[in-house]
Each structure stands twice: as structure tokens, then as C-alpha cells.
Length: 371
Image (cartoon, rainbow, N blue to C red; front, side, top):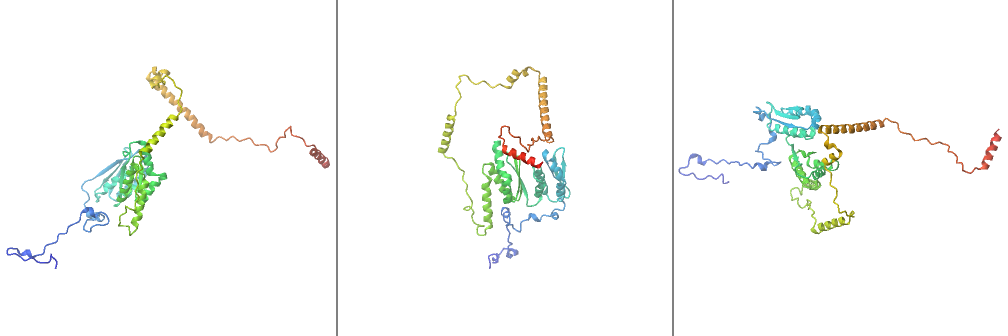
């Protein structure tokens, strides 16, 4: 018999219900351990949430709006009927205002899912950030999420930022395609943001790769490690073991003090080798300012109204010259090309060339015989 089944002797003053067995209290596990495939059956599964769980709908109407740029107006206008149709399946309404350049989504009385409005907000955000309709509408699914990573503030220097952003895209978008295949997420790089659509695990990997790329770590290193992890996950023996020995470890190459000194010495030597110009005791002439140039030309003493008219006239003259050049270029297509002179079949005999007398005699004899 177990300890719970052994009955304790009742005391003299104990009540009658003291002999009854104690009920076992079931303790639930922590919620953090339940995420992923190892779910406890006692916890509420989000996939089972249906219209029957919330038949009365929502108490209040919620709405979200998002601005979109001018260049996206044509695409959004064409794809808007499809957006309305997709949102109507979830009992949501969508409005498009082309004058103000805004998209708006709101709930209705029939809306039963309380979180679907948040997903709809993400859809209009993605549409305004150059994500195509086919990818943006996937966010309405339960297992699909999106993330907008702001990369413009990660790098101060504009030239460096452009180079690192191009590194993230790769030649003909090769790096982006590799990321999409490995993470099963759609990635769109537009201006100063990176939009990603897909499962949570893939979004986490893309966020790490993008931040590393902006910190001057090439995406190819992360792609290699992801590929190795993918192969290790397929192997049944190495599935649950430690993967650190198999993953590559990259170290940042730092130049030693001696190499940097040598490089500086070489630079100084090259500067010394450059030929110097002739020595003059006089300093170089000062660079003329804008006002000095106007005084020289006499423009400074003209009235402001006349100065503006002169500028306008000069612009009009320059534009007229350009229009004439453009018209000439257009007319060149319709003009016939100059043909080269055709060469004659019989060439003229050179006067100084020697005459063969025997050939001439034969020709004369042939001519007399024919007569």
C-alpha cells in the first residue's frame, strides 16, 4: 500500500470526515515551458479558438490607419478589392483614402476574433512598405507573423549604410534568396527598413542576421552556420547532442602594431617621392566668393527683381537649347543614313603602266578573222 492509502488512526476529538482520503491537488507547469511542440494538454490551445467561444463579439469598435507613399498609390489601388475580400472573411472592414494617402482597418459587430485587428494592422503596414499583396496577406494566418526592422539608425555614415544594405541583398538578390530558403520567410529591403514575413523562429534568425550585417559582419557567415545546423538536425544521432564542435568559429582579424607602422611609413615615403612644384614666395590667390563674382560681372548692382528675371531668362534659354537637341535626336531615327559611294567594277588603267604589244597584235588578228 502507498503512503496515501495508509489510514491514520483517528483521535478522540477528531471529526467523522477525518477518515476520508485527501484530494490530490494537480499543479500545472509553468507557461514558458509549454511553448513549442511539447504542449501540456491541460493548457488552452490557441488553435481551438472558434466563433463558438466568442458568440457575442467585441464590446467596442477598434480601428487602425497607416499612411502610404505616393509611388505605392497605383499598386494599392489595383490590389485593394483583394484586400477588402480577404479582410471580409474575418468580419473586418477596410477603407482607402487616396486624397490623404491613408489605409484604415476596423472591426465590426460580427468580428469574433479579438486579435485579428492587430494582424490586419500589420497587413496595411506591410503594403505601405513595398511588400506585395500575396506576401502581406499571409500575416492573417495563425502561425505567420511579421517584423519591420529599422536599419537606417544602425549606421551613421550614409556611404557605409548603402554598402552594407547592398551586402544584405547580394548580387541579383542571391543573399536574400538564400535567407528565404533557410528561414522560410519572405524578406523585403526597402529604403531604411527590412520587412520579414514568416514563422517566429525564422523571424528571430533574420533579425540577428540583419543586425549583424549592419555591424559589419557579412551575412554569408550566418548562412553557413544555418546550413550546418539544418544538416545536423536531420541526423538522428546528432539531433540532441551539442553542436558547438561542428559549427565554424570566425575571429575578427586585427592588424598588429608593426604592420600598421609599416603601412604608415610606406604612405609617407610615397608622399615624399611626389615631385614638388616651383617655389614661390607669394601665397596663392584667394578664392573668389559669390558676392565677389557678382561684383566683377556687375550683377551685384542690378536690382533683385531684374536679377531674378535674368536668371529666369537664362533657364528658359538653356531649356530651349535642350529641347532643340532632343528633337534633333528624335528626328535622327527617321533620317536616311548616308550611303557610301559604290565602287566601279572596271578599274581605270594607270597611264604609266607598260603596254604589251604582242597581246594587242593578237587581238587585232582575231578581229580581222571574224570579219
